Image (cartoon, rainbow, N blue to C red):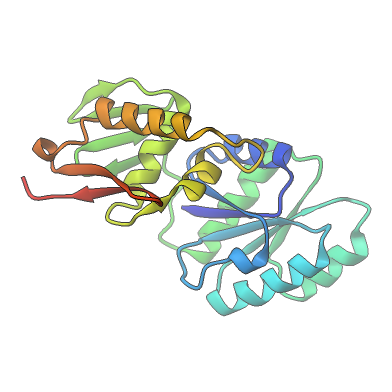
Length: 220
């Protein structure tokens, strides 16, 4: 599932991404970055910025997307106001993995009845398994690092759509890190090589000049 993290501090974002490894997390700095489509299945943001909360609630109501708040126990009045205004649930800070996973799973099951908290994802002949970051192609195991695993899933999740370098950076490295162009290119090259994303397998991973990369499915 696609989960957007809005205005979340870097250390909390890292914790959330690690805890919710079965999902695809994206990073947004401001509510004006929220998309006009409904690709986001859950929005997580801190309660500390009520202006962001108000804007996010309006967006979520329009798109029927659940909202999970990260709430400081001292902000009880603000939390009550946000819940009365349409926020679906909250988890108290400092975050605990068990609480976070339980509340995220419950919200997703409530909003999407067909959702199952599965640990295996299939993309054509590729199988991605969590935990363990295991990938196989027609049952043949492929060894990937954690970032290569995340990048491969990102590309396959968005097959046929160009991804900007900025989106790749925030999705894989987060907002707290700015990898060099060479670092991104190196990871792209490794994923292409290890997964053999070549025409003979029905894929073509190409750079989009001045923008980023695009994985395309082609007839074999």
